[in-house]
Length: 419
Image (tube, rainbow, N blue to C red; front, side):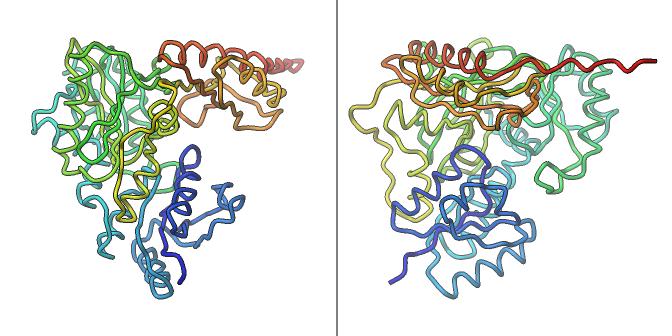
């Protein structure tokens, strides 16, 4: 008898995409990637992953491809590790009578304006916010808020398009840029609306929720404004008990209020005077290699749990014994224009730090790089483990510094042409 199929609608380009397929095989299913362009995921060819080329933005074409697959084998589940396709995967699972979240809840959650209204109506603490469909509306919203505001697209991922605007001129420029865009970086249509929200300066965290259970709270490191590039994470976050409880309670309350409660949800929050305000809920597993940190620090395999849930198998979120206790990741980013040098030497320098267990540069030597505006500007990562979070954080910071110092060469200064 052939193995049942676990279908993946597209994938994330870094991090857990490959792990999803690996876990499917480990649990006795054959992973199948449905993608408009499988070539954007190098791991698919490296791992000899079965792929089906289909326009994943066309619901009818996607359903026809799934029906063809179902005619030849048993389809046991449909998932996506990409923010942009979780609703499509939920739709397909529902049509096939397979496990998954509510597709309507996922679609509503992915629109940050709808999500934010739902959370506010349910009494979940959130920042002050307005939704704007024109530049003039965005400026008026910022003036109503008073002070700096964050302007972001109502759909997106990886801090794309999220920017701190300190005055009306910056609001005009950034809102105008966002509202003029008709498609995102994946070529999918985007709503002509932006969110204008209160700028919170408190510490930022994420709570990884599975079903309606808060699994772990993660300390987030974010780069300097005006952009909000995530530069690292620590698992677990070290917090006083009242603040830890407030974060977990707000996260679970948010998931329930949005009608989710199946599988993984990644909830981002900031502490604001002791109040845990939800910035956004992502109806998917966390990015930024957070699941790998959770696995190393707590022995809980969130990727495996999501795959098992998609296959309709029992899920166990109890950590394994003998795990280290804490894990940290730091992403390598450039402070200015530079050129990548010897990436192998940079990885070796990072791994020489006691506690460092993983280091990777994402681009080849000779690549010109600059400061990161969003997750696409990350050059690589280092992961460290230790008995305590402060130790893993210190090791990751040291490994990052050594890796960057070895990897980056100053970009040549352009010579001025003679007049």
